[in-house]
Image (cartoon, rainbow, N blue to C red; front, side, top):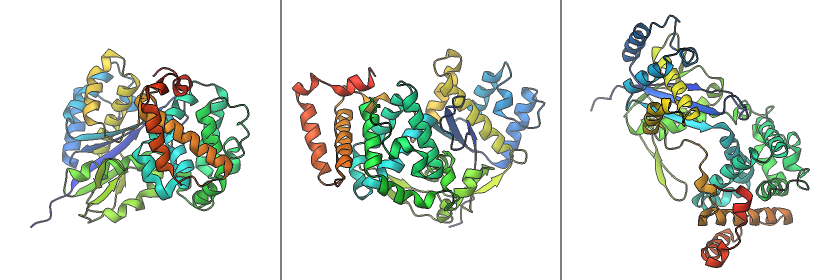
Length: 393
């Protein structure tokens, strides 16, 4: 059987701020991938430039957005890419909460992480922290800023509020207090597991908070790799990807799938790359210009989701947004549901064990079982501290 020709997948981003996830002006990151041949990309760009009388040498969402007919252009491009684009969308501040779980909780819970992922403790923590960080005032935002710094240096001294407990006495919010206590109680373990990512030990560590590589991983391995037999992946020049692109080399000429599971949803990672991921400039590759416009319109669709003028773009994005997108979801912290209440109880138990220096894993399956039994009881609905903590969702 003849080897199939690889499909060109071109990728570019919008809202890039590197590891600065607390940027107030750009809270949404989009990484767009388009399935266009080089010839199709050039023809499309030439036609769009002629139709909309674009004088600039390239199609760039940042420039097109300044035009009065930006929405018309965006809808036209989106319609032409129907079924031929996949976009990863990430709320940066929510992702900071996700990184908090990944680099504070995961090193400590790693030997039985499947238990906690099965019950979505990570989603509870990241959504709860997101809610708290932006409704509770400056002290919590200071902790978020310190954590962001820690995630760039991986030096505990850069986040004293996390690792020496300096805010525990005046931090009223129980969920944040639990995170702080957990970080303090298991600080040695967390520090040991992150030493290799410190800036003087690794070129990758400084990009740990960047979302580009994570987005590309999902787009290829649970996206395009399942649609096409072989891929030729072209990315716009990127320092973060340049530092981490070697992680994809194992998929070159690899037709095997890798089964994975979060404890509930089994999936397969698959991407047969025809060659290592390539980098190029948008000036030389029209398909990257198309990806840039798709990324830009996707950010606007989220940013202006309540604006009726963007309804068409919202509908398009809903059809093309990758399932692994990370946007705030109040269902994971809904105080009226059983699972969030159980996760709140488990988080309190983990913090208590951290205070005592106890084994964080022993018997935690039973802790979950007891929490589910307790909160199924009608009597438990009378007093619901989680509703008080997180407010109405």
